Each structure stands twice: as C-alpha cells, then as structure tokens.
Image (cartoon, rainbow, N blue to C red; front, side, top):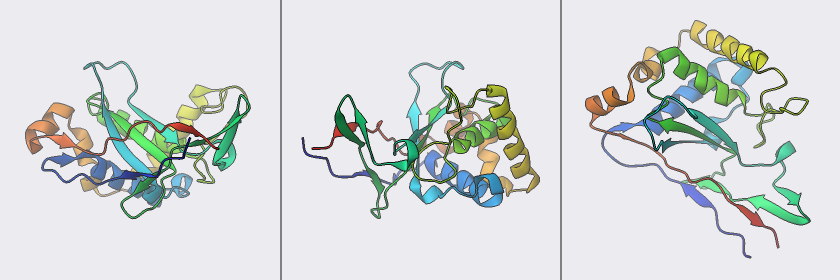
Amino acid sequence: MAVPSDSPVRKPARSGFDFSLHMQRLCEDMAQRVEPLRHIDMSRVAVAFAQTRKRSSYGMYASLTPLRFPGGTEQTVRRGRRWRIQRLSDDWGREMLYILRFYLPRFLDLAFREKIVTVVHELWHIGPKFDGDIRRFRGRCQAHSASQAKYDAQVEQVVALWLRQNPPPALYEFLRSGFEELVARHGGIFGRRIPAPKLFPVE
C-alpha cells in the first residue's frame, strides 16, 4: 500500500466564535509564560474540537494525540509489520507533532477553573523533548504515573504558576462562558475538525 500524502490542517474561514484560534492563543501563552511548559512549540500542535453525541457531563473533556511513537520514532513494529502514523501538516507545510482536541459542548460547560485545569492537564502530557511522544512515567501507567493524585497535583501547581503571572484576561475570558452563552453571543462556534490519524504499513 502506498503511503498517503500529508493531511493539511486548514484554518477555517467563517463567522462566529473561532474556538480553535482562541484555544491556540491561550495555550501559546501558557507555554511561553511558565517554565514547566516552555518546551512546547504550539506552532506544531494542531488544536481542534469534536462534537459530543450527547449533552452529558460524563465522558472526555479533552485529549492529546501524539503523532510519533515512544521515543519520538516515526515507525513501529507490530506483529511483524512496520507501521507509521498518518502525517499531518498545516497550510505552510509544517508537520504537526500532536493533536490537542476538546470535546464540545462538554468542555465549555465545565466551571472556569476546571477548564483551565483541563487545558494544562493535556499540555502536561506533551513529552519534555517535544518529539511527538507523550510524557512517560515508569510503571504500567505511563501516561499518568502510578499516582493519579500526584499527576493532578503537578498540574495544579502549573495552573497556579500561570495564574500568578497575571496573563491578559482577554486570553481566557471566553472560558468564563458556557457553550450556549458563547453561541448566543457570537452566533455560533466553529474551529478545526481533525479525524483521528490512521496507521499505515510501511512497504
């Protein structure tokens, strides 16, 4: 099977509230403002959203999809075959290393601080080498370490550090509104929608 060409991450051009753009700016500020996130280059993180099927508070609020395998490698071997992940690039041909996806309206219906914590939680998953792999911990639970409470405590520390830096309110004020409120104020919400990347065999 031939390897497909890169999938582009295109900027939407519509009227309404550009959710992806506002989240991108917020994450960029976090990455620039606090040391624990300074390894992140948001120009190579595709920020997207997905619509939840049910209006429920239960389920995922956000997710981070790495576009490399452990150690930042571009290929892996499974069941005797070599595979690679579908590549994703932006309008300028810059290859993305991660997809940061938020689930609406569920994410926007959280309380304000829970939204901030959710954003930092996902950014904290980005590996310190920024090589397309996640931050890995020892043991079976490599994504959150052996202690979920310890992981959450680290995230809370980063949140507090960012808030102490007094970031411009214009960056995060939209998070004080729920989904319906933003829709009513702006006439709609739009942003990037990126399908889950596929695995392809390397011939």
